[in-house]
Amino acid sequence: MALPNENRTAKTDAVEAKIKKMGPKDLAALPGLDADDLRVFGTLIQHFCFIDLNLRRSLELFKLSGMLPESARKLYPNLPDAKLTETLVEM
Image (cartoon, rainbow, N blue to C red; front, side):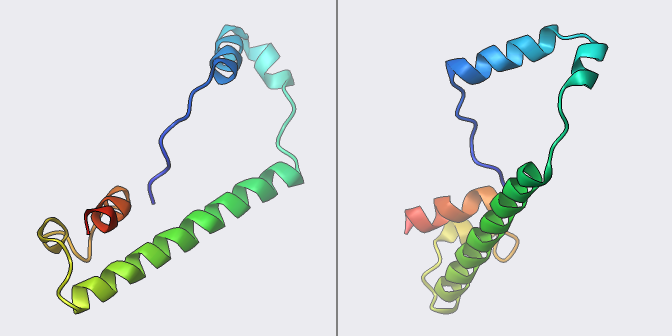
């Protein structure tokens, strides 16, 4: 499953710059992930998998009906995750 493109902001750039300047002791002192953090990651992964599954099911219907674009026919059913939405937009 492909991850969405990065949406870099000034705030994320500033945090990244601070982290890069930290030494090993400072990095080790950062708080670990707690249950809420892990729950958020699990929820995101679950949603991405659900979206991926539904996109693939949609493409299967287009394939069965003969409406799949030529560019996707060559790769189907092994279409990379990043191409799923591109193929549906193409239609």
